[in-house]
Amino acid sequence: MLLDAVLNVGTEVELASTLQHVVDSAADLTGARYGALALAGPAHGRGPDRGPDRGRSRIAELFSVGLSDDERRRITRLPTGHTGLLGHPGSSLSLGVPVRVNNDVLGHLCLARKRHGPFTEEDLALLRVLASQAGIAIGNARLYGTARQRARWIEGAAAVTTALLTGESAADALTTVAKSARILAGAAAGVVLQPTGEGGMEIVAASALDDPGDIVGTNIAPGSPVLVQLLSGEPVYIDDSATDPRMTTHVRTRFGPSMMLPLQSGGRLIGTLALPRRRGGRPYTAVDRMLASQFASQAALALVLADAQHDRERLAVFEDRDRIARDLHDLVVQRLFATEMMLESTRRRAGEGELSELLGQAVDELDSTIQEVRTTIFALQQPPADAPTSLRGKVLRETAGAAALLGFQPSVHFTGAVDTLVGDPLHADLLAALRRALAAAHRRPGVTSINVEVDATAQLPGGRDGVRLVVSDDGERAAGEEDTSPVTWEASR
Image (cartoon, rainbow, N blue to C red):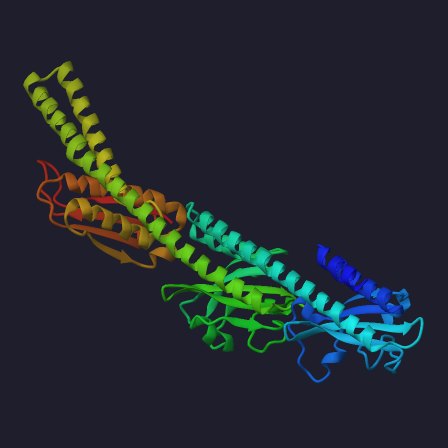
């Protein structure tokens, strides 16, 4: 019968049914009225309890035979062979042996109230064999669970890498990392923190079971105890975020166990990946920490590669735009200008009359077209993404782009708090006027310097507050043209 019991234990697939079969077999083979296999916290990944009261740890799982529901509820601590299954002392009434995995005692297999006589040494030997089989089953289940967990993390890391290399924006990429890690870790939230200019860290991306709106933007102030570790790229493990003195953010009260893992690659710290669980949630095991750390390293590398790929794509766009701008300038504009000169010469030879008037209109149209093409050339010189949002930055960007065609950097002067006084609705009109003025200056022969002035304190006719743009250059003027450029553009603000 013992051999059959051991063989049957080995054929069970599910751990719970395997352990229940161990208890049933122990009671049947020994003739016991009651049997129980009680497992403490380590069966759930909490780590072995090495304290002096190890044998009386709280029960995490209980498999029994012969016990009523009320009797099961009364068993809250691990029973042993000394205290008895139901708290009755006496080795002749109860029998218990530890269930071990390697050197860790995870629980006890106990029997009570043998139907015919006291428990014997043979019963004890049999119980030890079954307890050993239970330990093997638990160990195998742990290995299988760890293998499956590892596979999930590896698949998750691969999916994140693929997603990041498909061209997501920087913000979307960080959110993808946070969401994937949260799901894999079984966390309540996944957040990415990055260093701030003031020496602290800020949550820049978040994924949570609840609305993460109040999480993004949360700051860890400079001087916080946990910052020293985070900014140096060290992992931080928290047992309870709500009570740990190192945690200072307002959102900490809703979270319990947490991992804070560095996102770094090649010595470069990108940020920190934090994975908090809810208060009272299951603590992270050593395996959890190891797998999450490996994921964070892989995700950091993917972020670096994605950033490099994004830079390469942007460079390719810049090069293509620059090539188009050169082609427009060297081919299209020159041909249009030559055609304009031919028509102008023909108009002069035609003398006065309707034909001369028509040729003059054609010359004017070509002149206007050339100016528009030149304006487009200047616009093509500007980066298509990551444009500045302030007016000052936009003006400087336009003049820097024009320098590529002019061969020199225009001089720019600002008067007044242009970024504060000039609202966004005026930006587009002012920049369009600036492009036209720069294109017109580029047409003039002999231009060696251009001066751009933006005055946010200008007084317009009628005493109105306004903004004025003046663009002047030292190029040669045609007959009748003024020596200095006029006010190019102005508007009320």
